[in-house]
Image 1 (cartoon, rainbow, N blue to C red):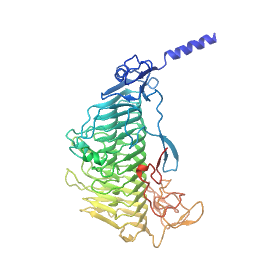
Image 2 (tube, rainbow, N blue to C red):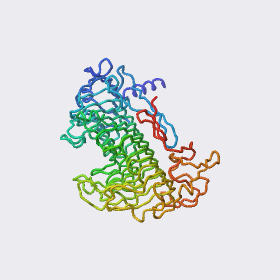
Image 3 (cartoon, one colour):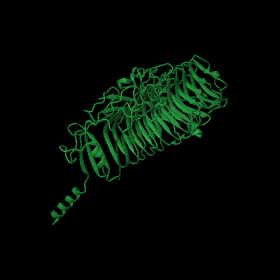
Image 4 (cartoon, one colour):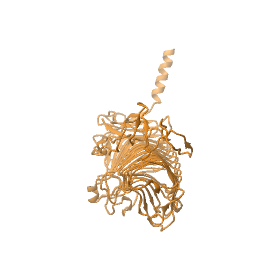
Length: 583
């Protein structure tokens, strides 16, 4: 009797299990086996909830497809690319060591920056677009709810992948050369075929994106817009067009990663912009246009020749942390920095290492609000933005830049209000402060920080702007012959020549008399056993009692006497706290 009941239950489970279907480029069958697969068009017409469709690697032509189903967590629609032999696609991995010293082995996308897209690796749509031409339509659109899409490549459409709806999951999505590339303007978003070129557009709420790759989109590499409460655990490598291709009629990417979300988490971004590309290089950009960018967490990122930007008054309460920004070029189109602009406020940036950026931290008002959303653009650089635990090495223009109105709205008195920087180490470069067309005032302060080998206090096109007399310099270790520490106002300062900071190595008990340029494992600054003669403040405005550290320092590192250039980005192994190693 028990055996009969067991058999009946087993039959019931099998009868109501997920439907399995197979898809190939040469399909046309009933889809129930690999010998009688569907076409992709048949899958589009027949995809339902509670189905798994395995899509064989191969060339699926230049049509556009849309897959949408309103499913539930227990009955999802899953569309999964497999290899040419119908086997699971196994993703490669990289080793990632982040600021806390934790090492992780992480999956990454099928392709990297130097790979050629091939239909032998993945199921692939290819419109045939080449440099100098414009894409048409969207390769793949995913809609509805609880749809999983894995292991696909799309090349040469106006938009590669667009993901709408809610509770979606996409993995190993590879997009290349989608957008407008007619070459009538070096800025992809200003072409006569204006706007809309996006490699991957993530518009789905409560959704997840992982292990994806985007390259050479004309307007946006990856857009996360309206995708609230979304988790992106991702190694997205959004490269820009090779400059030689640009000069032959291509358009460079405007925004590599455009983030307009609420309460979302984005991790593990790696981005590259080719040296000499004719565009300023918006890297990771919070820029709402009639939407919000509120309460997001962005962490673990590596940028080359790109910057992080938080723009407009609807960008607030975001946290950006654990990143590296490096630059290997100079000139008109070099722009690497952390930017607070056009009224963004109450954001926190922490644990960032910058090597040879254009500027370290920039407060900017360029009057760039969209014409239909004029109130999004505040008449100031921003207020109450905090930077904590920062290293800036050899900037080309200045460690801190205050930029005034530079665009269409005319002159306005703009100000960076309560702009505070804690636990920073500023090394080298021509000046500490750089002004450009600045007509307002900078208020806030620099606290518990090191200024070393910096050429001058300020310079640039200062205009009528100034550092407010209320701007604070609290416990600055000034170790430079470029200018005297007496130029600071409202300061407690230690000069390197007379009162060098002396750190005790906790493993040996001996004093380190040289500077250490590693990032701290503790964002509040790490207490040391040596006694300093002043009190600093923490990021919550509380006094820090002695002993405490000065600058951005590691608790127990091997002492680094001079900052070093990170290993070449292309090698996959930048130095310091972020390491990518191909295996």
